[in-house]
Image (cartoon, rainbow, N blue to C red; front, top):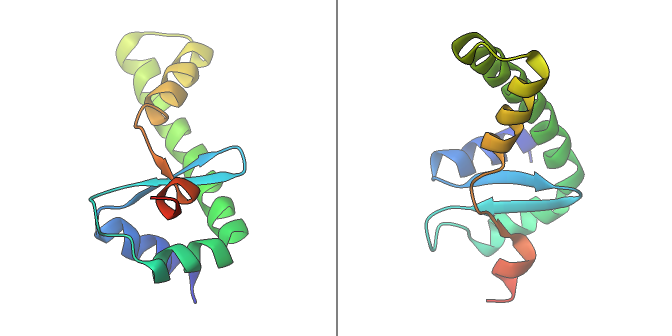
Length: 100
């Protein structure tokens, strides 16, 4: 399975994936995640984490540049705020979903 296709398919169905250390977290509409999706995420966890980390770095950089320009902040403060914005959504872990 192509991992990028998996991530894109989940995204199109409203599922958002987040990284918390080595834990892959997700949130989205109730009932959207199937056992097949969860199995695929578990099987390809390392690859998914690598892709998400790259996207996260790119997203923080872009958002920090916007914040720095708009709010006349130092780059360091803009990056701190960008990281805080990115982690503000309450995700659910795959482990939590499985135990429900």
